[in-house]
Image (cartoon, rainbow, N blue to C red):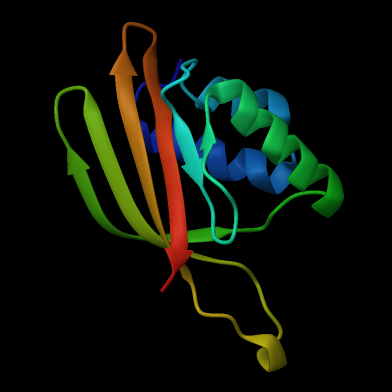
Length: 122
């Protein structure tokens, strides 16, 4: 569906901001092998479980405004790893350090999809 890992990544962050579960579902690989690991949360395995967790988070927040500053892109034939710093807008009094994010994309016959997302405090 996505012709590049960058297109899949743009769709991922846009979907988080818009609280758009349908688009998130189109970004994640349809696999039980995909995973998401967020700070202070247990490992989430499989596309359906990931979408369920994000659905709960996004219904509470109404969307997540996250900007990403890329620090490294590693691309192979059918695998891409994007490393970057995720930042949420904060007031000056509550400035939070960015999270380090690692997004792994896989190329299939249908296009590029998110296989794994992990972030942790910097």
